Image 1 (tube, helix red, strand yellow):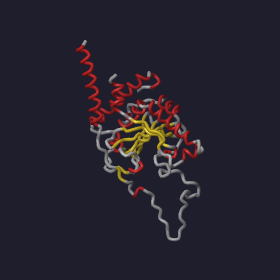
Image 2: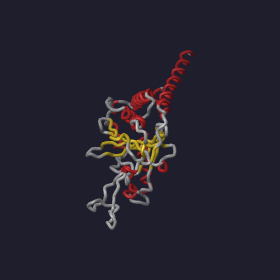
Image 3: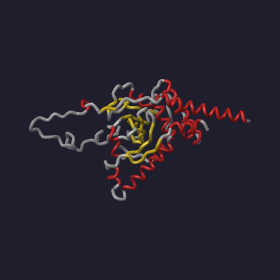
Image 4: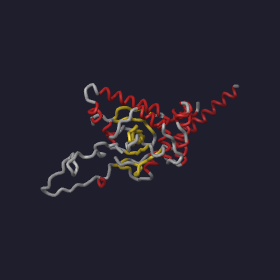
Length: 209
Length: 75
């Protein structure tokens, strides 16, 4: 178990790269990936349905996620589906952090931020996100999927922080013509920001240097 | 010195290859997503002549709670 606050950034990234790679090796040994683990052997993937059925909780149940697919027309063309990650902000409230788009082979494509109406619930800003992440700890008892997702969040915390910043800048750009509340509920505005993921390059950067 | 440098380069190449192979083993084709089964949707039967339920209200006439339809990616 490791608190992020106790390590320098370089050590932090190296540590979480090691954790993530350990998860990938474990998945590789069983010829599986995060999505197949979430699907838990389901023969048919139904659009809009949440996987796993009973949800996924990790990091001492302070974080939640689910995987789902939409109909092809509403997704990125090479996307199979995406994880949505939420964090416990107290008072039985869960704030959406980011979406994690996955390709047809179970590999992460990009992080994305959506408008508030898409996920509903409280709006999480980047400071809150960093606080949530930096005050949480990993849990060896979590499922392989939970450990993979948590390591990915930790490793990509700077990128997700930038993602939330870009999202908020985009929202602000709409407020020249609309009230903030209207922007957040505007159904024509869906994805507000994305950040590409180059997993192999990221792991090489932190594990080989 | 030259030999030492070569070892470092080879060592790095092997490690990069190990990462690539591990990721490649997780590259597994996912099952195709199919449209949600109709049986999962709520079915409302309305008798002939009966009033249609208001689209945006619940039984009590209050605004309906936001569901997955309104917020497609909510918990």
